[in-house]
Each structure stands twice: as structure tokens, then as C-alpha cells.
Amino acid sequence: MSETQPNLFDLAEGRRQAKKTCSHCGASMNEHRHSLSKSLVRALFKVWSKAGREPINLKHVGLTRNEWDNFQKLRYFGLVKQTGNKTGVWQVTQYGEEFLFGETRVPKTAVTYRGDFVKFEGSGILFSEATGYYYSREHYAQTSSPRDEGHCE
Image 1 (tube, rainbow, N blue to C red):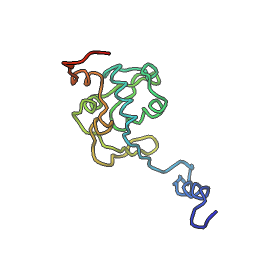
Image 2 (tube, helix red, strand yellow):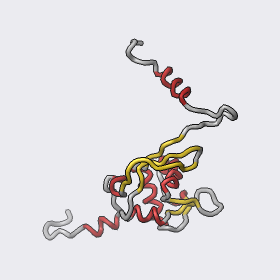
Image 3 (cartoon, rainbow, N blue to C red):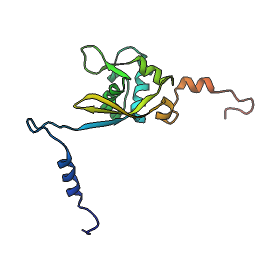
Image 4 (spheres, helix red, strand yellow):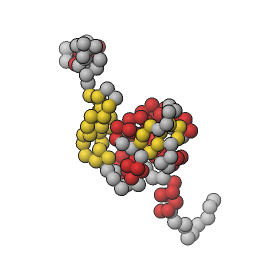
């Protein structure tokens, strides 16, 4: 291995040593940053499309594996909340609905510590900015217009 290229195993070990742990119990003492990704926003939209602001079990929504695994991060942004005594039942908040309708901005990054929200970082983004202008079927239907000429073949 060349002197200019670091050993990847050393880098990984260095990252492990950089993490802070409690001297008493060994628990992680690190904050974690969660970005409001396109995948998270699409998951929010899918849940809202199926249930509006009513509670729904995520297994009835058809989320991708990535959307399913990361869905709970939307709670750090105040866009969803877990409801009821059943695992997997969530609902879109009023703030989440306002975000979907483009009425409010949401901070790009949420910081957590041991699963609890700590603070926001970065400027706020709109739904269209988070998704790259991902629109619903209803939006496309409202903005479409029939062609005057041609045929369907």
C-alpha cells in the first residue's frame, strides 16, 4: 500500500475512537444529523395520499424498504406522529400537511441525541425543493390540457 493512500481499516478504527461514550455505562454520547431527504418526503406523501391526516398502519401504504426503515425520522421534523397503542400506526400532522401543500418550509436537518430531538440546522425548504418537483397525480391532472390535433395511435 502506498504511503499517500491511508489504510481503510485504520480510518474505520479512527472513526470508532472518535465517538464519545459515557465513562459510566458506555452509551453513545454523540448527536446524529438526519436530513429531510427526497425518500423521506416521498414516504410522507404516500402516507398522506392513502390516509390524509387520519392514522394508518404503514404496512397498508406500500412504502419501499428504505422509506419504511427511515419513516420514523419524519417525527423529528414534526411532520408525523405515532398514534395509538399499535406499532406502525402513524399519522401526518397539520404541519406535515402544510408542508406537502407548499404552505410552509421545514428545516433541512434535524439533530437528535439518543433518539430525542435536539435542534434544527440549515435553512428551511419547501416540498418542491425537497422532491425535485415531485407532484401528485391530482396536480398533473389539474395542469394538463387536451391536444387539439392528432390522434391516439
